[in-house]
Amino acid sequence: MEKESSRELARDARAAVKEGPEGIARRQRARLAGIVAYARAHSPLYRELYQGLPDRVEDPALLPVTDKERLMSRFDDWATDREVTLERVQEFVADPARVGERFLGRHLVVTTSGTSGLRGLFVVDERTLAVTGALGGRARSGLGGRDLLRVLVRGGRTAIVTAPGGHFSTVATVERFRRDHPRLAWMMRVLSVNQPLPDLVAQLNRYDPASLAGFLSLLTLLAAEQEAGRLRIRPAMIIPGGETATPEALERLATAFRAQVRPAYAASECGFLSFACAHGWYHVNSDWAVVEPVDDRHRPVPPGEPSHTVLVSNLANRIQPILRYDLGDSVLLRPDPCPCGNPLPALRVRGRAADLLTFPGGNGEPVSLSPMLFGTLLDRTPGVEQYQIVQTAPATLRVRLRPADDGLWRRVQEELGRLLAEHAAGEITLERGEEPPQRSSGGKFRRVVPLAGRRA
Image (cartoon, rainbow, N blue to C red):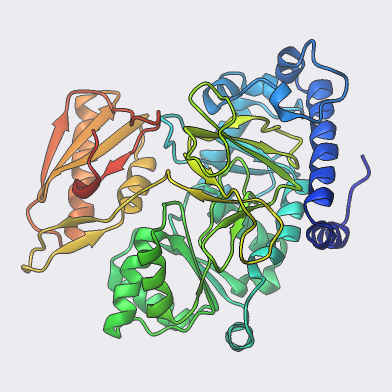
C-alpha cells in the first residue's frame, strides 16, 4: 500500500466530515476490507481465525471477537512484523529510559495499566501515529476566538499530568514527539502525579499551559486548587480522560478554569478512537475505527440502549491489528443526530468510573487522592502481577495481591505507607486481603475501589 502523507490524511479527514455519513461509511468499509486482508496475509493468528471468511470483508460482524487475553497469549503469531516478538518487547519496556524510542527503529511501544486483569503490550506503527495526528484537528474544532488567543499567548503549550517513567500511551507519545522534534520539546510536558500536590501546582503555575490533560479525578483536585487561588493558570482547553465524567464534574472544571472542557475517550488499543463535542458526546472517528455496542453474547445493541460491552476495530494499525476487540466498556450510542452538527456517530460511556479516595488527614482536614496515584505506584513495584485496593472504611484499605507472597506484601505495604504519608493522610490501616482480586459485574477489575463506589 502506498504511504499517505500527513497532509493527505488531514485533508481526507476533513473531506470525510464534509461528505457526511455516506462518505464516512464508504471509507470505513474500504479500510476494514484492507486491514482484514493485510492481517490474514501477514499474521499467523489472523490467518487461522479468518479461515473460511469471504475474500473481501466489509462487514465487521463476520469477524470473530478478540480480546486482550487471546491476543497476548499468541503475541508472536499476532504481529504482522515477524521481528516483533514478546521477548523483544518485554525487554524494551523493562527500560524506562527507552520510553518514546523507536522499537526496532520504526515502531512505538505502549503498555496498559491492566484494568481487565492483564497488562497489555501494544506496538504502534508510524501510519497509526500519522492518522492520530490527522484526526487531532477534530478535537480542536469549536474553539472560539478567545480560546484561540489563549492558545497563542501560551505558545500552544500542553501539560499532561500522568504517571512518568512507564511506557503508557500518553507518556510514550509525548516522548516520541520530543525525541523527533527537540526544538519543539517545550510545547509538551509530562508532569508527575507521584509528587505532592503543592509541588505539582507550582510546576503548573510556572509552565502556564494552553491545554491541560489528565485523569478526571486528578483534574478535579486541581480545580479545587484553582478555586482556592493556589493554582493560577488560564488554559483554553481541559482534557479529562480515563474515567467516566458526570455533567456536574465537567461543569466544575469549566467554571474553575473558565475553559473549554473536552473529555477524551480512547484506549491504548486505539488512541484516536473519539473526541468530545461541546454537548458532551464522544464522536467516534468512524472513518478509521469501528465501534459496535453489543450485549453479553456479542449481539448488536440498538442505539439509545446501554451495551454490555463494546467491540472496537482499529483500521490504521497494521503491525498488531486490533479487530473486533472486546474493550470491556458499557456505552450508549446516540439514536439521533448530535445537536453539534457533526455527522460522526456519537456515544456516551458508562464504564471506566473512578472516584477520589478521601481519608482523614493528619491535620484534621480530609485528604483526597486520585486512584491513579495508587495504580501507578503498584504498576512500578517489581513482582506485582495483579492487585486491587479496596477502601473498606474511611481510614482502611484492603489490598489484594497476586502473587500472595509475604515479601511482596511487605514491599507493597511499605510503598503505600510512604505514599499516604507524603500526601499528609492520617493513620491509615492497610489490611492484607487473602482473597484474590475480584472482578466487577462487567467482567473488569476495578483496581482501586473508593469507599463511595465500593462493589467488591
